[in-house]
Length: 339
Image (cartoon, rainbow, N blue to C red; front, side):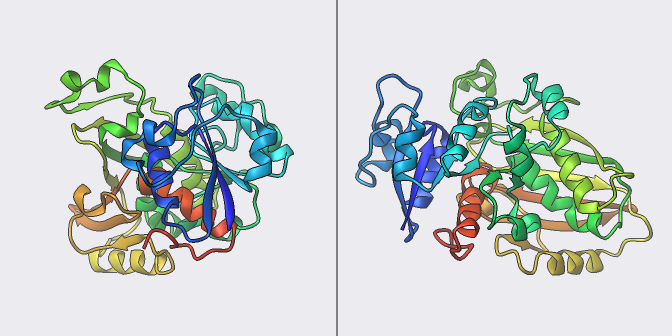
């Protein structure tokens, strides 16, 4: 049985993480922390957990956490993980960080996009990007996982087979993505206030969304050619629904694409990936909601390749893939607690 800590237990992704781990036969949540002064119980933070877990949050204390847990899932805001990760790693606690603090391999790129100096060069150097479909072989041995973002997972999984096989132009890829409101987190914001977002559909952070360099970085790595980097045009939209992401991706082929052959390529590329479903039909957010699946299909339209990728932003885009990483790190079957 592996002791697990949830650091930053009040958010939506943390709730999903706890829910999944409660179904895990070899994991036990031993510590939960909150930055709230009153140290609330988990079932007070998340009433859906009532009678499922009897645990109160406590202030973060690295020594006490290390006594009770072998791994810590961090559900902290961006930049906050930089204060916590070095203390945990120093004490031998393995870390799965759901923030963006360790996803970008270049500290200067992180500073440019997040407006904050990266202060943990050692942790950044060790961190493995936690997308099992691409980095499965590197995950078991590491003590530091940078859990991917929700938009990035949908986008990268949509494009990886085409980039890996050098079938598309690497510049001018257009990603038109929509997310449910939970992707903005649980903290109140004017733009996610119900009267503002209900019955409304809008783009945001056009040309400057922080997931852009993450997508570029990982796909460039997949393409094994830093001299010809991937550059995407990524536009996110807010949809008035609770959860889910649908990304429609437009790419220019190198050669004459055949739709059937592309679908077969995707099926072959993801044959060993239990949570990617390559489908002939057009995916919808309800089909992957509350699951750890990413549904993908491909179409050829007027000489362009269109990829549609759909997942639950709180599960395959956050908590579910975090548990995938946990399973791989500790030698459990990758699908444990989720299939």
